[in-house]
Image (cartoon, rainbow, N blue to C red; front, side, top):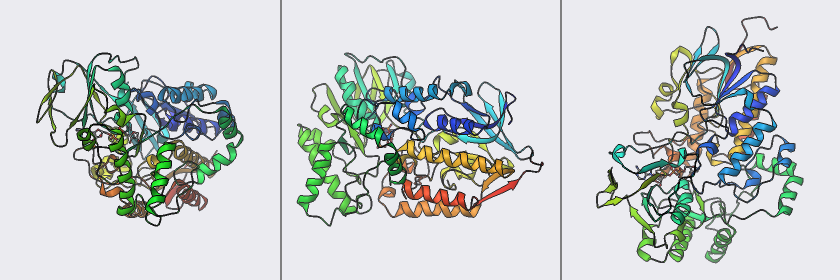
Length: 541
Ligand code: NA7
């Protein structure tokens, strides 16, 4: 094994769910591995997203690793939907339990990773100017880690304080009595708005697209429920891995259109009362068929009208895009917040923001004076975190060039790229990633990559590289699956439509995590079909 301080078997980017497990997996197999992490601590997404109300929308008992039964049984979640501080605590617990920190270099960004064909290694440039080399380069950068701060004119003139939800300060931000403006009503905005409204003197919400949200109905866990989940660990793990979305929920078999209106309303109502994403998974055709989709959309709109007392306000909050084709949201008192006297709503679709002034936000209709602005404006998803680094494969070709600035993003299985030997992406573009329960997809990739690297070692092989035709076929398959749904008909971050100038392309594999796992396993079992594997030039020692 190689490790002369700056030469590793593997370098991993990021110390979130992906990087921590990748480190553990490779170290267990005897590979020298170094993780580089920009933050001062572990956690990834959950290290950076500390905004008020930040919470996960997967249930706690499924939003964790399952590679270690011991770990699963040692950790106890407090409530149905885990809050950011608790998830961060969990990931710190994992890092301590498996003694991962000595192999993680914090406060260090990777700026470049270039493949050296002669040496068959990756030369990796760090922002402290040091260079390290590694045989394998693996990204665990997450899908939503490159913050999108819209390029509003005049932000530098604003006299108050401003924050992005994805880079929230570590210390408490005190909004007591302040005039706060928040731009954005995606998951982050919808979670933060009720909490900030509780504290702020006045809260002005700048909304471009109204959202569908359903109540989370978060609650503390019953100890008996936790006991049962631990007892049933093996079965839960199996179901998660074989499921469509990474959680052991039944796959819907009925169409929304084959049942009576009364039955459908009952199903939606039950899901609403139960809380969570139940409406989204009520019927199989909600994301496929316009009429089926409209039944769910109309149900949520009717709830908004019931909750929001001011009819004019309610009207502004009614979404019209296909339900579920932007990330469906779950909330705690989101629509209720618009009944508060200290909350107002500005529609920035009809009157767009023209500039940030010294005093606040100016739209085409008015200027709003503010003490603080919160940007809940999301991320350059999927490709953004990867393209922040200058990653270059064979012949010095960059990932950006290969993907033609995003118009031709294509990968093999969302894990590898032709022209980039020994480079792996955990939950990369064209894998199930964000349309699944992330820890399940992360574990699947980590295990697949770990097995692959072990296979190469066992067989004395030097390199693995995706073939162009296999990559093209996979990418095409991903697009065909997506085009059979309504997802591609909406301007969403899934489509890259939230980033001005970013080419539209749906970069998530919708075939389901169970089927995807099976496909990846088959490929491995067939000697890594669709990849070219090369033997070592040197004799194997
Ligand atoms: P999202 O879901 O991308 O939401 C960002 C919000 O910010 C959304 O309402 C956008 O409106 C709005 N936005 C973005 N740019 C602008 C500009 N220039 N002007 C006005 N409004 C703007 O990000 P989140 O952080 O909430 O959630 C990301 C994911 O994290 C989430 O889906 C979960 O998977 C976890 P738009 O809808 O584009 O009109």
